[in-house]
Length: 120
Length: 107
Image (cartoon, rainbow over all chains, first blue to last red; front, side, top):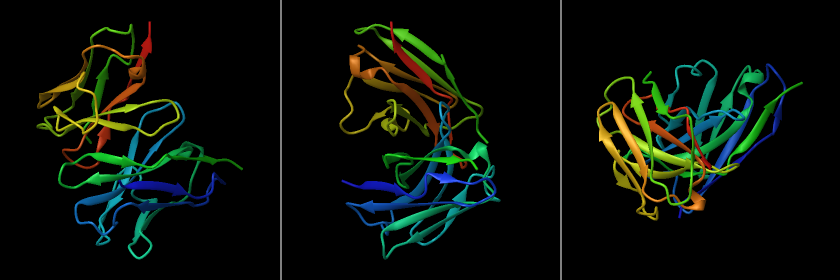
């Protein structure tokens, strides 16, 4: 059973860079049948796909965030990471990492989520 | 981007009721439509994929249908644990997009 766990600071100052890491256990991040994803949810609101990365390092981003987002992968550590620059209060959200099945095209495994608040 | 619109946004129902939630895509997405259930403070859980396929372990009272632009999620007989928020999601093209959610509450 694949498990994902987000980690990183819960508070980030405006204009700084939000950095989160997702650690995958119970399966290899180098599996060719998965895209490793970040999704966020502002408090009380809906879900927004941020982007995902393949084990090869190919990444795909939501155009609405593309200028500020970088997703990277470390196959040796079975981890992938999110960096979101120039954050504002609008970036306050619960950030989830998730596995996207490339063969079946859905998000089937999710981390528990981590709340990141942008505030001075 | 493909815009996903769910209706209703909220719904009150009783245990044992049959409930239907609809999702409409702004353009055809074939059957690249998934449904998720989210309980308060938890991550979403995949219920239905490819419009009508039941994810392993999900009770058979959940079913999905549709193709193209119009889709439905049906719960045949509501159980207490089904009160949650439901989201549709299209995986036809990136950016993958979600509906705004339907909150299912106890009447």
